Image 1 (cartoon, rainbow, N blue to C red):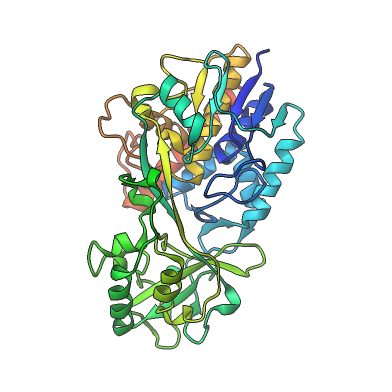
Image 2 (cartoon, rainbow, N blue to C red):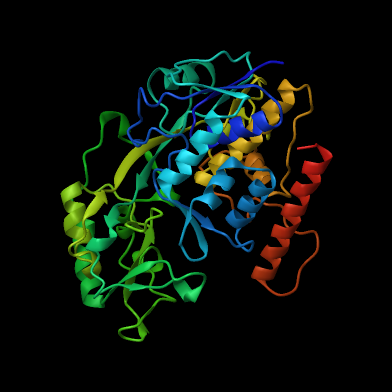
Length: 438
């Protein structure tokens, strides 16, 4: 049996390795840490979470909730670790970052079908079964090799991470704990602002100093899903009030009313000592972050455990290059997985690794590859990034727009319809799992 080489042990790489190994294939998993770290990574563990600890909504009325249910049905190691390392976050699934990554690292390292090789790869053999999951920060010799052998027109964009503050430094005379509309556990720390406070904050935010870019980061595109808060604010005074500072559904117990603006903080570790500022990805300088975000009353004395950072992400022209199996059209032994395929988000990255891992295992075991189809969330993503009709390709989160609609109309409104789509998706995954003995 041919061994599968997987390059990169991020969420996509570990999921691919896990799926291939559990189906009986032999895997070599290459990871450059701890010898070398990317600009955004610092943990020695696999599957490190960088931008956020949130894996988003659990609801089957939400496309990402459907994706999670499908991945769980397919024995995803990412989902297994997420549920074991869950921290309170209302109706969302958030995890303890360290516990999440450590759990995955230990399971991958102890698998008898996976050989972990801690060394940096600068090239690969396209004729050997290989999954490239080097991540959106792929650079140097590997980036040049991919451009030369695979995609000379690789695209780039910016991604940004939100700051993390120490819970003890939050001013609870100004803050209150609640989840929007009272849904799920009251797990968010909410920081209300009056109109006068918001006016001052807004003026200082749009005029604040941003960090200088590295020369290799200039003239790149900004992805809408991770837009820096200062860039968002430049679009207009009310933009933040309909985005990360939306007060709707959050009643301040001190006033009995919604505030003019409200910033939410989400728990970032199991101990509940660290909280990230939701939606506040930023490229402001560190001193400016402390000064401007300190204008939020509850954060006036905040201790920053991590300031926001911004870095370059890279992805290939997948619609021109990939099949729905995440393999290359012209080089069928070569697969790509993760954000560099144009799927956006932690779960979407893991989903691409899941599909790529299953399909490389099918190839290694002499079995037919699987297209999960648009009737599932995992398949809708793989079909989106491999759709040759797309001429202006941009990264995409999972959403109902790319999932096949129901054949018959369902009465009861959008929520009922979405829940029915979710149920259809999960049933279809179960059918494929049984039919293909996954």
